Length: 259
Image (cartoon, rainbow, N blue to C red; front, top):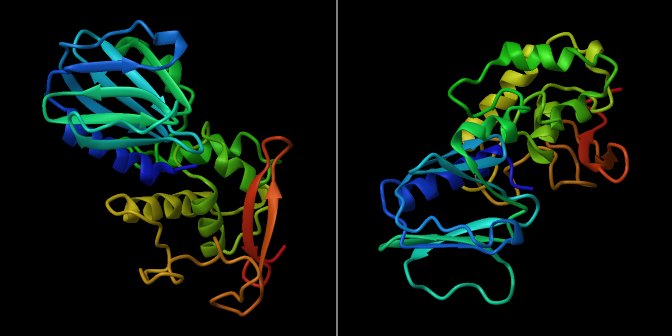
């Protein structure tokens, strides 16, 4: 699933294509909003909240989308042929550009005043202007017996982190993923590091946590299961965390992240 930095970049791409322009095409291909028509309205802006996208349109309306595992927004010159089959969920176009939502996991149309109903449950946005590390720590501490690996993926605690940044953040802080939240002395340093990692990657594609952009050198543990740790040489371990069917991939180094 695309993480907060990728969603942040998607919002920026949508702003460049749609902001301030009048929609000449509005095509919702989901049953719930199949009759909705935004043609003739000006797009005001698109913002990201964690892994959610909010496209605000003239007249007090907001298009809420979520990429989930396979979704994407494809930007192309207006009039270009759409992807084949039934994978297109939404088309928003003006005279210059078209934004095509492909395999979007969520498509909603709500009043702009109702946005909080959709995203109000989220914790502080790691890439938001109002990022609040203290509030993220407070939320994490509400469940001291929970594993830190599960707590970091809970978007109600802090929004935007996924399996890649979870693995990389825990490695860099030397924290075993199954350690309990209440056992971690410096949660503030942990969430602040996650914020810095996402912020460092928000302007370019790909995830680089090592400082080395060369292929196969970009991450410490993610994507390196069975390979030697770049620091200590221990083989990187791979497993799953979370209750079924919500379990998610986790990678760690047993040498650098002791139990």
